[in-house]
Image (cartoon, rainbow, N blue to C red; front, side, top):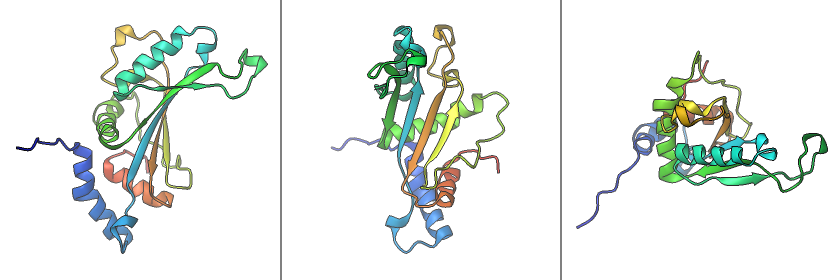
Length: 185
């Protein structure tokens, strides 16, 4: 007997609806040309870790709860005397999500987190990098349902980068819009 494998909802949506729609919209001749999401990188800068390392520990715990994956600590590359920063000091953390975890995170981001943003008017459509990748910045981590509000000591922002196989921004935008990212325009 085989085990039932749970396929993430967003992966099913991509395979059933999004990929065929993009193939038709952009008239791709091969299924390999259809853009797909390869990874989501969540990055949190913790500059306060220079004065107090407990800030980094709190950020690591929160990011672990949000992404369900242990973050990597990012360290300063250069020393900057004005910020009392030496090369090698921890200044942030990041997580790279792929496959099932990436689709689960995308689902939670679209279903729970983005609707929690106050005065939300849509994501900016100009935050593409020219190679089919899209980055959004969030100002606080409390929009995620995994975070317990009474345990939060400080609001920390984060950047979320969607890395796609699209070669042009217009293809990447069509892909992300099909997944359900609410763009302004």
